[in-house]
Length: 127
Image: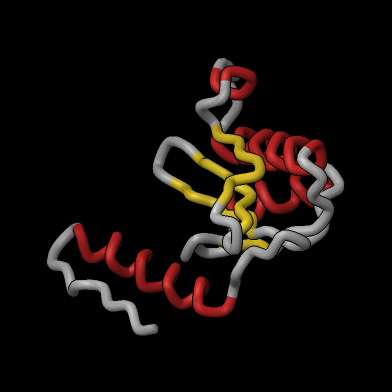
């Protein structure tokens, strides 16, 4: 199935490029009940991580920098991403998930995305 992203002008071009990259990633990656998809969404301020079973269409676990346990901290964005990774791994393991497929959401695997993934691995989630 072909998806198209409208060509944008000016500042909106960045968002369109991100959407195109995410579509390319999603062509190859899908979450199953045995290995759900760990999706990372990044904005300038916050990060959200969700463990999704694409076949059933359900979110099994989620965590974000907006959670009460993370939000009050004075840590930098990379440290908050590590906290989100550890929290989503803990919640996924509580939901019975041992292994996931990592979906970087069209973002480059560096910085906060890599910090979240590394923290989730250290917490016991297998990629």
